[in-house]
Image: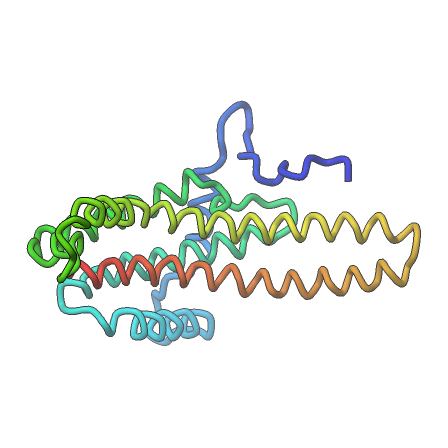
Length: 226
């Protein structure tokens, strides 16, 4: 309990060098690459999940939008595996860093918006001014729509950061409370431990759901611009 509550969110360092790059690259080592004619169960499960998610996510896109399939599937794999590895004890979760999430959200959002202005210029500009808007409200609505457009990548990054950070903080607090209660009341400590186990299971689900939500929202932004 004497440990700083936010110590687990500090970027790990060795000899003054940040280890974020190695941590970010590590999940890719856990995803096997099929190099045999007959795949094993793990690779078959991985391919089935990718096909299921890509079919659900990319079915709404046209031909131009479907060219982003590989990038979006790589994104959901990266975020999901990073979130899950961050639930291991004494590990670091890069997706709790707002700077990293902004680094993922802004280029993807900008690519989708630029694609929209390049392929559907009139339709993209029409989003700034809904049809039938009264003349006195035109300047205000243009400003509001512009702000809502630029806030999309920030909302993407903040949503992922807040959900992952909140889950880690809850696990840390309840885990510390369980240890403190063991010397006071074993019954209360047992109840708290059960809550901790249930919360951990919930966090595994949240880790995957947040990866899916992040990728789905990028997919919807792309759909609006293709």
